[in-house]
Image (cartoon, rainbow, N blue to C red; front, side, top):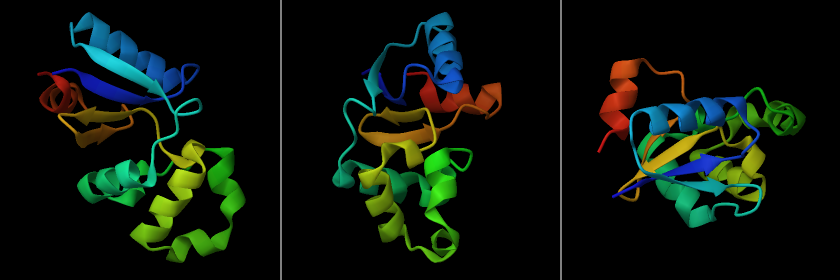
Length: 118
């Protein structure tokens, strides 16, 4: 079973993850979230697995433009926001066997290997 990697092709962190996956001979399918935004149902299952907080792209323009109200949003409100603007999602997001297992690519090598190696 391969891993699905959600992100955008020009993202530096995604490129780093692609290189790691290739160097470790891990099969993956890349889904460009700009061209194929994830559905609210998909995002909801990801939030259920990981929580909305680690999924937030806090360094992105879309996140900064939301305003102070984001501090009081529920998980459901985050799912709605992620579904409306995929740029709010931290990248890359890894889905293995239908379950979100990792978001971002800053974990230590042991954690990355544990989450991604089949």
